[in-house]
Length: 94
Image 1 (cartoon, helix red, strand yellow):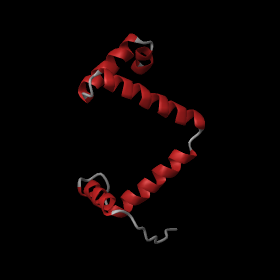
Image 2 (cartoon, rainbow, N blue to C red; image 1 turned 30 degrees about the vertical axis):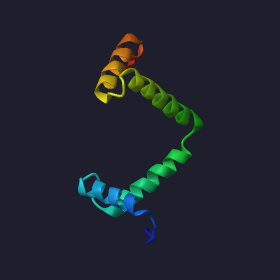
Image 3 (cartoon, one colour; image 1 turned 45 degrees about the vertical axis):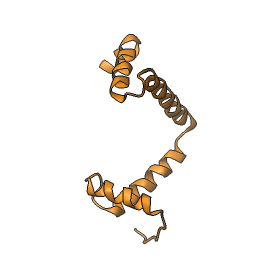
C-alpha cells in the first residue's frame, strides 16, 4: 500500500535529485525519494558493529587519500597495494 506525501526541500536538493534522475540513476523523482528514505532508515537501523566498520573504512580511505595528496586515482592504487601487502588479499581472491 502506498501513500502520497508532500515534501518541502531546498531548491538545490531538488535540482540535484532531478539531475540524478535525468542521468538515469533512477527512473523517476518518486523512485529517487523512496530510495533515499529507505537508505536513511537502513543507515539508522544498522547494528553498532556495522556502523563501526563503516567508520573505520572511511577513516582508512581518508588516510589513504591524504597519502595520495588528494588524488583519488592514486589513492585507489595505494589501497590496492596496501591490500596486497596485507593478508586481506588472500580473502579477496576467494
